[in-house]
Image (cartoon, rainbow, N blue to C red; front, side, top):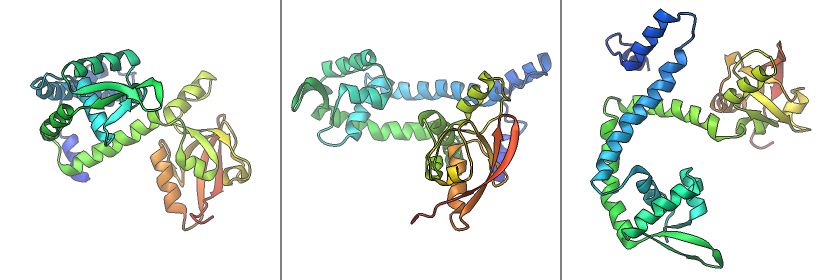
Amino acid sequence: MEAIRRGVTDPEATDSVDRIIDGWARERPDLDVSPIGVVTRIARLRQHLDTGVETLLAEYGLSGPDFRVIVALRRAGPPHAMTQARLMGDLALTSGTVSVRVDRLAERGIVVREPAAGDRRAQLVRLTAEGLRLFDELAPRHLANEDRLLSALSREERELLAGLLRRLLVSFETGGVDAGLWLGMRLEPAHVARARRTAVGLSDTPGLLVAAVLAGTPAADAGIARGDLIVAVDGRELHSHAALAGAVSDARDRGCLRLSVLRGEGRAEVGIRVPRAAD
């Protein structure tokens, strides 16, 4: 891990985003521009990665969204079919965008549309034999290409990066926090919590916001209430679902956790019982 930190802080390993940050440090030293180091890098990396992926797919006359339709159908397993509505959900695309992609693939014989059994109003999109053959040919090349695009990172570095990106993505993809439900409370992620607090004039403090507490649970017994902001667990800052889940898991043997909570702007320390798996 230390080797990784040294590598990413190497003064010779600067990029275009470093130059942006340096420029703002000169022009507006009062601004905290550190988020640019993450958000802008992700955006610029996305451009490079998309170009690398699209270059290979173009050899097959496909775009990225075209290939994602093929992949979703193949991953579904036999008979490699989905309703268009399910495709929309899996690919996070609008109905119109999915229709355009399916039309393109259908013209080439890669997919077909057919009525869903037992529901004439629903239409399935199914991968054809040609679609299966195309996937089997392209998938190994696609994965090897993605591996090549990540060549600057070792396996250990890739795992570290994947874990951090997973933690960030989970905060956007989940409406609540599963570890909180284990304790009897529904929690909102840190980016939502900050927006809610600043909207009512409270400090812009990261943490997990208590949206609801279930009666008769450890959270209720501990006196945790809706609107509390959990900012630390056992003395460690709490910014994510993953951090709370890890703390809950670690605490099961001893049976309790210590939570630091903001109630408005006042801080309180709360002990909470952690149920064992058999409880």
